[in-house]
Image (cartoon, rainbow, N blue to C red; front, side, top):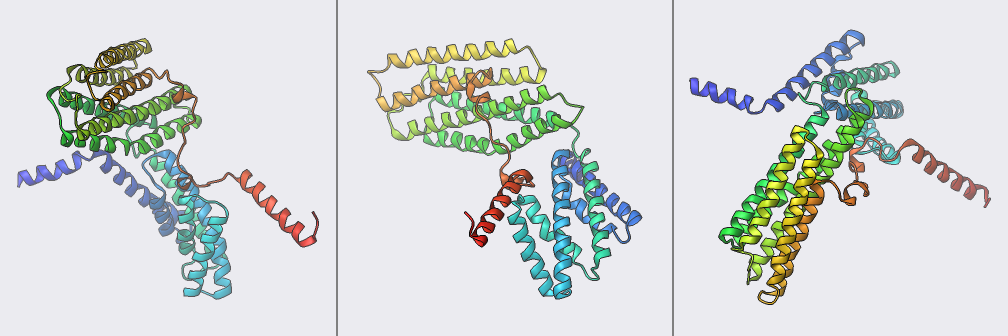
Length: 398
């Protein structure tokens, strides 16, 4: 019995972040119900539903979701009132409401978040007994629910957006270093295609983490823009560090692919090559050292030294490979030299000296994840051009 209790407790202690989030979500929904019923007639249920839909794992995302709910409710309530007056309450009114909401959401270029919210909130508003007064009550309940979600989402995480970004950078950097260390050991002792396939699979898993890292770094950057608790310069620097670890992950995956291609093509002189194995191990150690410096907020000169040493090591490896130019297969030699290029790019990411990190704009979230795919000014210009085009076509003016 005691063992069962310990296992049950461990299920929750091992998932502290998840437990915290569901506890906050439950408390937020309950509070929204109380506030909705207290200040608005029969407003508790709608407020609780909207709160549960809006609350997310961070304050930034909850603000965005809350705004999406408000936009959706305003549009949905207007359409719902119109369709009910035309068709009365019934399946025709429901079908017409969902259809018109989807068309309007598409026409206004609402993102995926708000596009879903429009028909959902419209169906909430269209409930039995709808009237102008009821629609206003439900709209106010939506505001209460969204506001409650925004307030409670501040407590969903123990750390700040900046802290969560640093944690992700450290975790991914450590996983890159561990994979490189495993690859170095395999190259030193001799590896085959099966071993390289496992490394490549792990590299692909790391690549899948990039969108999450980018979204988290972007959240930290935007949070610092309006929060007095964060420094904008620090958030911008952290965002660049996120881009740097993203580039590092890509290079590590490419190295795994190169070793795999060498193994399956035959004449693999890289298997059992001590110089290559040592260079890959040095690359792993450099990434770990950079992560330690970032966690300790150490002097940037120390990071520069690590990157400089890695560049020197890669050039030594290049000299060694060029000496083998006449004795090994040329295709395999080209693959090995490409590993040198990967190591140098990792060094550029370690000291963040590459123009590719700062001079090239990194895309943010996809448009489908935003509340508005186009800002109101752009939409206004588009609609004005369309109206002018239609007016000219009707009046025959050029």
